[in-house]
Amino acid sequence: MGTACDHDTPPLLEDLKVTIQNSSMIFPSKEIERKSMFISNIDKVLTFDVETVHFFGANRDFPPHVVTEKLKSALEDALVVYEFLGGRLKISHESKRLEIDCSSEGAGFVVASSDYKLDQIGDLDYPNTAFAQLVYKNKNFLKEDDDPLCVVQVTSFKCGGFAIGISTSHTIFDGLSFKAFLDNIAAIAAKKPLAVTPCNDRHLLAARSPPRVTFPHPEMLKLNDLPNSHIFEASTEELHFKVFKLTSNDITKLKEEARNSIGADTTTRITGFNVITAHIWRCKALSCDDDSNPNKVSTILYAVDIRSRLEPPLPKSYTGNAVLTAYATATCRELEEWPFMRLVERVFEGATRMSNEYARSIIDWGEMNKGFPNGEVLVSSWWRLGFEEVEYPWGKPKYCCPVVYHRKDIILLFPPVDGGGDGVSIIVALPPKEMDKFYGLFNKFLGL
Image 1 (spheres, rainbow, N blue to C red):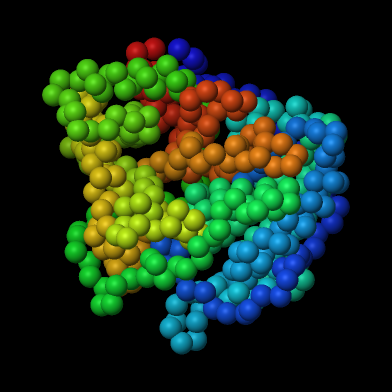
Image 2: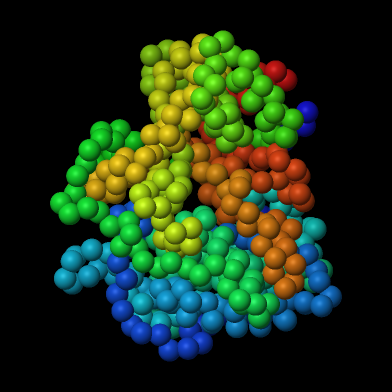
């Protein structure tokens, strides 16, 4: 069994000494028809940017300046394939809805360098907030108040390694469609056929007419019911930041604990994700129960891909956001006293609830209301997305991660660095006292 937690923060560089060499706009390599693109009710609430960094070791055949040229050319072709990528978000005069103006205004492209070698910047699987320097922030490339939907930065290191930092509006991609986008960039750069032919028709997730909300949706909170902050905002209180690690043996042990629980339901799928989520849930809920109220209700949220759950199913190549928030609830007493299998069952039931009709009901809820997911904690899994498996002409990444901002209500799952098997890294940010309790519970429930 591996170390459950990197409880001591490793030394981190706070400044990667990045210098911007050049910033410009890139445009589609062929003329594309200007049009307005409908976006779904799922897309329209995700108007924040997702920033990912993809690290690559040195390759003598592909030094950073060669990669930069190949990547730039591939992106220019991708702006044709993904006709919305060079566009801008705008409000339609007719429908008053947010949509994408496929205007070919372009994407941002930045070339930068760091004064460090790649092996000097610290553990790649310990997301350093300084990694934000590897993603370009200033988007006013050609005119003020411009906001490209995609900006790419290539940062070279002294060793010949480099990082590709990509910022995209969450409105245009979910994790699965972003992975397909990366596969296509790699294919274009290698002069190969597209890995996936993207399906850009977002009307497939349009609300029904008239909208029919056929289920209660406690996992959603109307905008006018929201407090001053919501789950997507960074916390202003002091937070400690830790990486907890589960090895494949740890995950197997959690599965065995679930199977051996009294009254285990054999119809429940005891997957790695389900047991990890259940384990995180009880640790998080019990660590923040300051008033020791055993009847306090805890709600955990987690994303479910609905592509295969709809009738008819969405194409796997659907480019928009096709994930919805599932939820599970239990009281703190139940989380502490129930057999582990009961918690796994609750997580499983939350995903099973996401039928075609339930998904359509949430989409229709979004047509009638403005609001956000509502829960104590959101588990955001990057564990199985496979960004590190993308085969570029210059090789696979050493590691991929989002730029992490400390949020106490969001827990992130990542694959381990350097092919660490089927284990998982769990990124947690909590106030100091809560972190100490979480740490103790995490190890206690693992039997450490």
